[in-house]
Every structure is written in C-alpha cells, then in structure tokens.
Length: 476
Image (cartoon, rainbow, N blue to C red; front, side):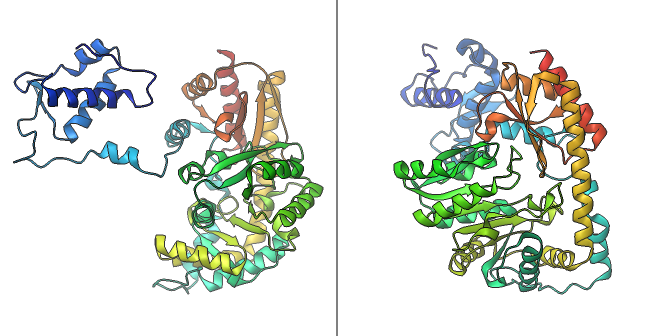
C-alpha cells in the first residue's frame, strides 16, 4: 500500500483510512476479486493500533462497501451499488455530524470509572446516599395521598410546588418572588440549557468564572457562544474586570456561582456582589446565578445570594434540590421576570411536555414538612465533618506538596499541587490505586490543580482516598 497517513490532519486517522480504501475501491486500486488486508496486517503496515483499523473497517462495512467473512477475510461487497442489499446507515458519520458536542474525553473517562463500585469517589458532585433524607421521603410516599395530576401539568410546573418554593426561598434565601415567576426544571442542568438556547444566539459573548464548573459543560461550545473568563481569587471574581471585557466584546450574559463556588469553594465578598449588581444595572447585562450550595454554610449564618440583593430584576436565579436533598428527584427551578419564565416554559414544553408530577409532589411535601429544616441542619453538620477530615488528610498525607483553600460551605475543596506533573498520568496512577478525582484543567484552570469532593464518601474512606492519591503523586 503506497499511502501515508497525515497525522497532522484534523480528520481522525480511522476516517482517513476508510476514505482511502473507499476511493481505492472506486478507482480500482482495490479490485473486487481480491481480499483486503487483514486488520492486523494493515495496522502493522500503517503503524497504527489495530483498533484504528477496526474502526475504519466498521465505517466501510456500515456503508455497504465491504464484507467481513469469518474464516475467509475481508472482501469488497459484491452488491456495492446496493441493488439487492440494503445498506446500514453510517452511524459514526451521524454521531460526528451532530451539533451537540459530547463531554470532554477526560470527563467521559471519569464518569465511567465512577460507575465502578470499589473505587473511592472524590470526583462526583452529588451527596452519598446516607446523606439523603430517605426515611422522610419514604414516609411521604407511604403515608400521604398523591395530590398531583397524572396528566400534563402547568407549563411552569406544579402550582403547589411553585408556591412552596416561593415560601422556601423567602425563608431560607431571603428572595422575594411569586409562583408565576418560577419555572420547575429537571435540575440546574436543564435550567442552564434552556437559558442558553432561548436567550442567546451563536456568536454571542458570555462570561463565566475561572475556574468554573460551567467550563466543563458542552452546551457553551455546542451553541457557538464566545466564552470569556473572569479570574476567581480569594474574594471571588473582580467586577471591575467585567467592565473591560464588556468594552472589548459586548458581553451578553454573565454566568456565575458566587456562593461556595464550584470548584474553589470561594464565597464572593459581599462588597464585590454589590459592585457586580451595580455594573450589571449600568451596562444592562443579565446575571445567571447558579446557587446549589447557599444552604450548606458551616457557620450557620444565612448567605446573601445575588438574587436576594437584586433590586432591579437583573438576576436569573437557578437552584435545585440536587445538592441538598437528592439528585435523583431531578427538581430544580429558575426564578426571574415573568416574560422570561414564560419563554423558557414554552421551550421546556417543546422538550418534555412539562415536569413529572410524581417527583414534584414528593418535593412539595418535603419542603412543606418540619423535617426539611432538621435535614438541612444534619446535612451541614455531616458535610462539615467530612470537610474537616479531608483537610486533615491533605495535611497529613501530602504535607507541603499541596496548598488549598478551606471552604466554609459547599462540597468541594480546590488544591494546588506544588510539583510539576503530567495531569493525565497522575489521573491514571490514581485510578490504578482505586481513587478518582477531577483534574483542574476540566474546570478551565491552569495546570497543577485538582478538585476533591467530600460529599460522596464517609470520613474513613476520604482519608484512604487521599492516601492513595498521595501514593500516585509519589511515583511521578
């Protein structure tokens, strides 16, 4: 075979091979009366992995161009023009052609590892099952009558739940709103998707904090947005940086997690929150506030969200029960101006015809019960204990090899490793030792950072996980 792979070409190698063979079939380079090279031989000849050739042959077979015959090799299809034989769609082409981008490869790798039962999970951003209020939720389903609708509900979600959320955010988050200004969503993720898809266009410029959980979301790349970053320091983002960014790029929307930010755990300073709201009003730039953690303050004091300080209606507020009750309920909400909420509700109707009535009923009854407050108090105590354990473990096992900020709420701790290392190699070494975490680059940060989550494992397991991470770091 007189042909070389172009390894600098953006097209995947397996597709280059498939295209070369397809063109060779058309021009007679590969005659129909001769076998194609075996997968092993072709891989050796081209100096690629056998799996790459397998993927190329899969592509050709799905297009009806070749036939694999067990025991007799791979041949060109006798019915190449599809006269008598139906052709299989080339699903790989469809997958690659879609506009909705997949998760980053590292994120996909971590997710697969997290599915394994025996791995110590310091990566997942959800609570462990022992922190769920399972007993109370079971009592609701076993002893109380279902009051929801079995047909399609209101486009904005159950009115009873929206009324309960109105009372909830007033009592716990100092936010004044009404049921008509609330949309029930399938967690905060769907809320973000609806906002991006309904309020922005390809080419619009948006701002996110850096580092940020939002950096890891393909939705920003899939929709063709231009993303700019505001650095997070010990007091959160600096609002003055937004002014210079807006002059250069005409920012349309700001996406922030100002309270116990993911991944840093930083609480944005109150003066900066005030200044940000002032700038937002002056420039007319909406703020999307993502608030999963404000109820987890370890000091016991209420934290002022941006929405609670917003006097002009500039903030669209997103929150959910995922990080404080149970992720599987899939109950989130958006609070904002009625016109915006109605627009987002219309889009949600197009996607799923409204939220599931059964989980809305459970969420409503739990928010209305006395058990909610006792659950939150118990949750905060347990999270603080786990936070204390991971701080202790980092200090003991890693000593001066790591610097970190001790969060006063939330579920994450953000660390800087004080030595040079290959991020992927360290992750693989950690996985070999049975512990998983989040590399800093997936959050948009510079090299040398890692995020550990302390909500998923109990204290003794957290300590073992940090010990294993330290062992992985030592071998690099």
